[in-house]
Image 1: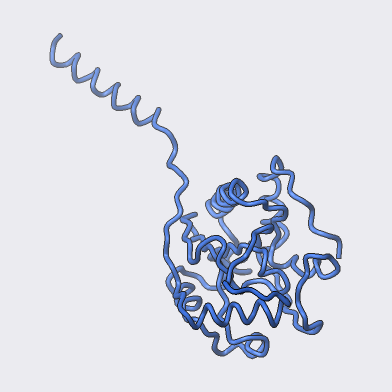
Image 2: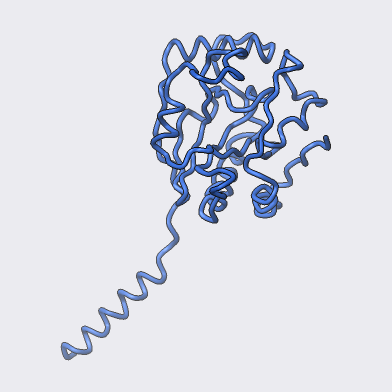
Length: 222
């Protein structure tokens, strides 16, 4: 064989290896927020005071995924907001508990998935449903709609979670109040509510279309 033929063969082999290689594997990057004795204590107290559940550990049994957006435009600032165990500067929330808000997962604009807390560790992210809900935060807002990469990442993450846990519902944060008349709702204060718009019907309709084969339960009518 002459050198030019070998060069062409090597080039064709390289093209084949590149074009035939499998797509990137779905990955979760661990980026843990602070979990210490104070956060554990506040979480257990929240479960008791808000949800009426006496537990010795701040854990959940997931049946639901709640999709959010952050209203913050980057990962690091969002992480810094969620990281402290206690909440500051939110009178609408501190009246219910000093436990800081957080979620188990956070997805960047490019679809990178970060795990802030173990899947079944309690997080304060949705009134009335925290005790059974895994939260997925997405970097975005009303003025910064969620991306196609985030849509794909949410789908893959939810499929991953559905394989591990008996997930029955996938809802947008803006839909949480629809559960007030169901047996799943556990919030002792009838006046403790916040109005949410995230992540919006458009994103949730797109996500539900991608997840149609999972046969998830529909959100109750208001």
